[in-house]
Amino acid sequence: NIGRIPDDFQNLSSLRELSLKGTSRNGNIPNWLGKFRSLLLLDLDDNDLSGPIPSEIEFMRGLNFLLLNRNQLTGTVPLAMHLLPQLSK
Image 1 (spheres, one colour):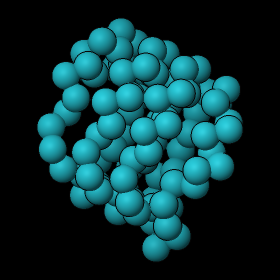
Image 2 (cartoon, one colour):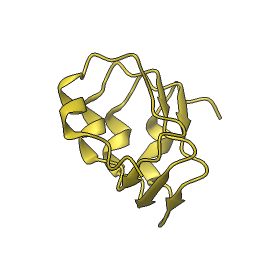
Image 3 (cartoon, one colour):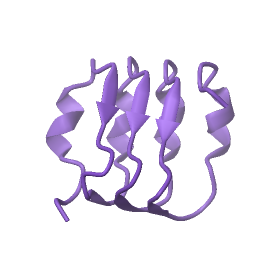
């Protein structure tokens, strides 16, 4: 495994797309991803991520695509995810 999603990424808050698909990431999805207000695409598919989906994702108002499949996530989908108006269903 390459390791966790680097904390240094949180300084890139103006990103429009973040794809870490199939990069052998592990650990939890970091809460600071909620700071990415301009993000349109978050692709974390096909990794070893675990734990819950952080509720802070509700702050990613511009998010169109959220790909989290093929991980080891636990818990329920945060209720606030329905507040993401652009998210493709």
